[in-house]
Length: 104
Image (cartoon, rainbow, N blue to C red; front, side, top):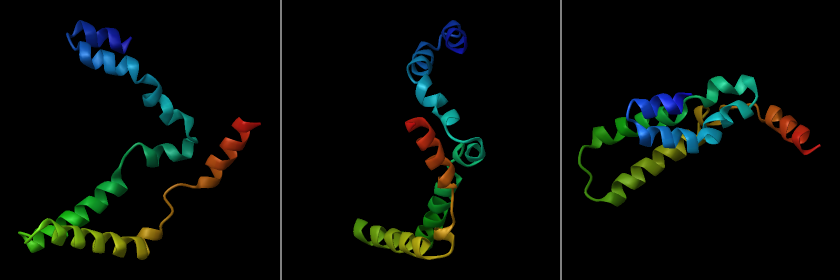
């Protein structure tokens, strides 16, 4: 198994993490197959972080933490209210169907 190979490579901590967290790792397969492409990455979150980083670099140094927080909050409000923030990431009806099947 992969965990045994990791132990042979003297990576005991990694082997332990893999063995203990295997259910979390495999939970990916509990989702409908058409969702796999979307949930395997965190690209939407990375995109938001890049946008915030770009805006904060323009300002340079903030006078205090509250100023930075206000800029970030304003940017997040803009994203949430724009067309970009309204895009549907996953089709939830497939998840709802799956939940009903499991409950039955």
